[in-house]
Image (tube, rainbow, N blue to C red):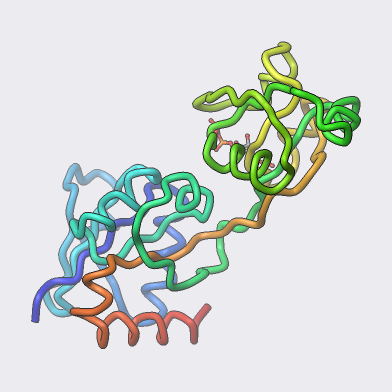
Length: 211
Ligand code: PRP
């Protein structure tokens, strides 16, 4: 039996994924050691390997087959647009991709004005405004703290993730439009899905039962 390799998006998502895996009897003791500098972890009995990667790199590892399976947010899947299969909604990490800004910006959206949109997700923002809303906008790519943009006058609105809404509230911004719901998803390499179909579909079935 060959190893099945998992790429997990670093952080909270990885922790929740491992907790779900534990429920179906997939454990990786090595990975729990907080002080370890190891990058790849092995479960010899089950012939599984795990590694942690930056979220946006997970679809890349899976597309190229360096990982058979990945767990990553739907936002990243949409933004990276890799050739991979999305096979399961894990349910956790749920939040929304939204157009946000000050209340005054609502009319700019309604009138399809040529506005500036700051975002960490230019592909998602472009798809939403151009293909769904048929509104021409200028998209400005930022790398974090997106809520700053309308406050300091860089853009009229932002496209960003809203979870509890507290970042928006504390900065005098609100949700103006909803783009799509998000959550953690399992993705699979297209060749692995054929070659390791039995093991992967069993894994999906087991996870569905405990989620
Ligand atoms: C995300 C997102 C929002 C915030 C939303 O940012 O970009 O800023 O969380 O969460 P809330 O609705 O619960 O307030 P993150 O903390 O990941 O950092 P970033 O701003 O650097 O992207």
